[in-house]
Image 1 (cartoon, rainbow, N blue to C red):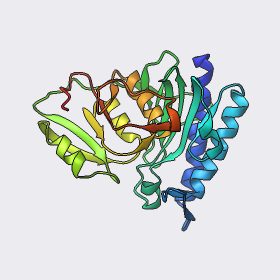
Image 2 (cartoon, helix red, strand yellow):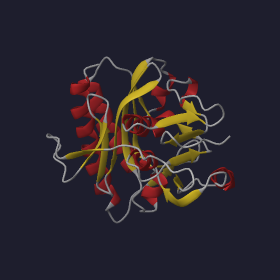
Image 3 (cartoon, rainbow, N blue to C red):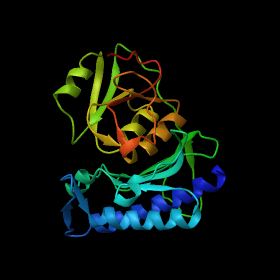
Image 4 (tube, rainbow, N blue to C red):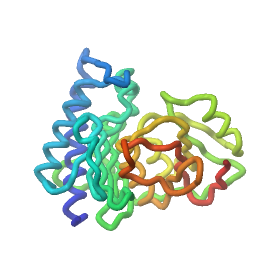
Length: 264
């Protein structure tokens, strides 16, 4: 893969999908349906998925493509693939809370090497450069030209005063019990893959997820966090989280800045 070719494409598609999502988000009303697992899906999910999928297939016709909204893609098994969540944080979208993101990642041999996370309602755009380092681009965003960027890097955590971020829609007692094992200076809630990006920028030190996620929920944020010097590990073994698993299900995991003294 030529990463110098990949990055402008996935950045542009994320921005285009974000425009489509905001158009629907800002409309007076939009349709919300329930998928087979009872999770919500909106016309914004479907429109963004169609736009991103068409763009990726045109640019990279030989790469397998996994997306949340296309069930027929889920049976694929490949070592190298593109993986997309066109609208992560649908519950945040439906409740008009703004914490939703567009996510596109490139995975090779189980590792999300490159990715983009765009939060259109918050005007925040994070991605990996061709060399793998992570940046946040400062808007306004030109789809055809990368603008001003700032390199992002994880914090140097103070284990006596950690900054923790947790899910806004899926926080539960088990998560709170785990967080309570640490000395926490502040805890915040955020939706979608933004939590990875808050760790990547040093706005948080630790993000534990004790709940079900799929690989398309995490791959892009994981790539950005890795590019900023962070890590994502399985909750049970503290081994690196890998991709391309049967069924695309993730185990519970912990995303963190190195230096955090992980608890079991």
